[in-house]
Amino acid sequence: MHFLPRPWQQRIESLWRADLSGLPRWQAALLWAARMLAALLRDLSDGQLTLRAMSLVYTTLLSLVPLLAVSFSVLKAFGVHNQIEPLLLRLMAPLGAQGVEFTRQIIGFVDNIKVGVLGSVGLVVLLYTVVTMIQKTEEAFNYTWRVTRPRAFTTRLSNYLTVILLGPVLMFAAVGVAASLARSPWVQTVAAMEPLGSLLHAVGALIPYLLIGAAFALTYLLIPNTHVRTGAAVTGGVVAGVLWVATGKLFTLFVVESAKYTAIYSGFAIVLLFMIWVYLSWLIVLVGASVAFYQQHPEYLSAPSHESALSLRMQERFALGLMVHVAARFERGEPAPTLRGLSETLGLPGPAVDHLLELLREAGLILQTGEDPPGYVPARPPERVEVAQVMEAVRSAGERVLLPGGARRATGPVDEVMEAWCNGAHRAVAGITLKALAERLQGAPVVARIGSDAEGEREASGE
Image 1 (cartoon, rainbow, N blue to C red):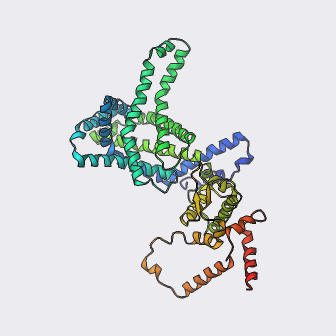
Image 2 (image 1 turned 30 degrees about the vertical axis):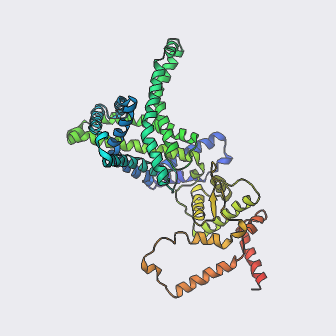
């Protein structure tokens, strides 16, 4: 948040240093909400959310008509294809009268696409355009949820086709059921009785907003390539729904006051307004995804930055402490520690611990369980993992990336010094295993005992 004045930056940074455990519940809740707001502002100021929202605007423009064409073809088989236009009118409502005209143009484009006469190649291209949109959405959600591994291609293909083919049917079925219930005789009877009638009317007025929030929540549950808890998805969906409705009302006022833009851009003004509204909509969707993420992973609210700011030496120290803690719990038969538990044990913010876990996973030293939330266990028996292997996993991270040719040339004395340094470090901790450190974990801090262990090894070897 470098765009803020320095005093404000200092106040925001102080949010991350406060200890919530020693505060009254109401103060801790307020501070947690302030951290959530600061984290969202930080994510927006970093530029990644806005950049991905702009990317999704471009993808939406390319795939909107093909997506509606596919949905139209599926819904036509159920006889509810005429419901697409009313749904689009609701989505375009913030555009005002121009939204009605734009909706008619889109429906006209959809009517001109005859899926049955496209042929196999045209149908494949049509489906590819739609699948690309869902894939881009998944990538944006995976970034928000700190997921680096995408789904397998076959899994993505089957999931995407399911969403494309069944999603519109389920959505319009839910809308149809709600409309049928509203027209049922017993509901009409209840509506005639007061105060139940007023209450029912108020609930009916809230149903569209509830459906919007439910749609957002369902999106957060299904699209990220990770397990999302229902409570977190609902929280994100409610926040996104409120923001979407409020932003829509404000955008309507903006459209009403934008007559001069219509005079400047003429017929192109409606396209510009549509692109702005789509951008704001995607940005709201991603903000809601961030809210859901922080609700499920509050440990990420204890750091002022996404990135780990640890030096290489500190990364080695905490990676070893992390592995020893995981090995100790494994040896004692206790439940596997979670990211949040490791963060509290090591006294590190969630992003820093997650960075270390990723390094250790890539080195094949640690595994993630399938529980919710996931725990972490040694990938090999602790007695077969030496301290030097853990340190090397951290120090050699990223070396598989190809370097320029000149960076690989031998540099004589420098290589000799580096080799001597590495050999000395390996000899200092030779033979010390994770199991040995885990057994002594109760006696002293793990890293503090390395020096004495190494000294004992040298005495035993006669050095």
